[in-house]
Image 1 (spheres, one colour):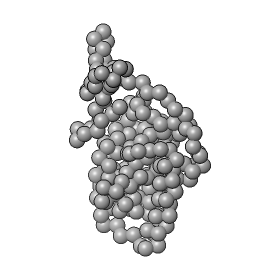
Image 2 (cartoon, helix red, strand yellow):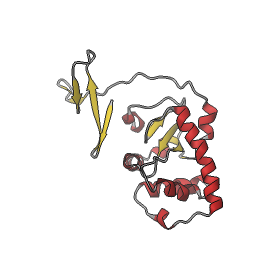
Image 3 (cartoon, rainbow, N blue to C red):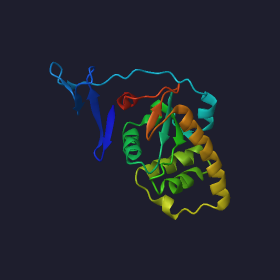
Image 4 (cartoon, rainbow, N blue to C red):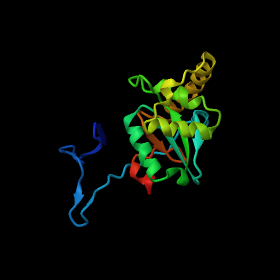
Length: 189
C-alpha cells in the first residue's frame, strides 16, 4: 500500500498475519538496499476501446505505450512530470494522457481547457508539460463557449476511460495492455 502525504508517497507494509503495520522503507541488511514490494499483476478485463477513445492526446517517440490518468493541478502529477522530463520518458514511451479533473482542484478544468484547446497533439503536450511544471499561461486563456462545449464532450470520454480502468486517483499508470503499473519506479527503468 502507498500512503500519500505532503512530502510525497510513503510505503506502508502490512505483515502477512495482519499483526503489524510498518510505515516507511524496509532495508535489507545484507544489501543495504530498500525492499520493494512486488504487487500482484491483474490483467485488464475491461473494454480497451472505451479507454482508447478516452485518450485526450498522445506524445513521445518510444516503442512502449504508457497510459497516464492525470490532473494538471495534482501535486503528485506535477512531481511525476518533473521526473518524466528529467528521465526523458517521452523517448522511451508513447505517452497517452487521460484526464481526471479532481473536484477539489478548483483550477483543474481551466488548465484542461487551456491544454486541450491547442490544435495538435504536439502543442497539447507542450502546454501540458508547461502547466505541470508551473507555467501560469492557462490563467490568461479564456476559452469560448464553443471550445468549452467541445472539450467537455471529450472529457466525458476521458471520464468513461477512467471508470473502465478503475483508476481511483492521480496519477495512475497503465502499460500497453492497460494493466496498472503499481510500482512507479519501474517506469523509469
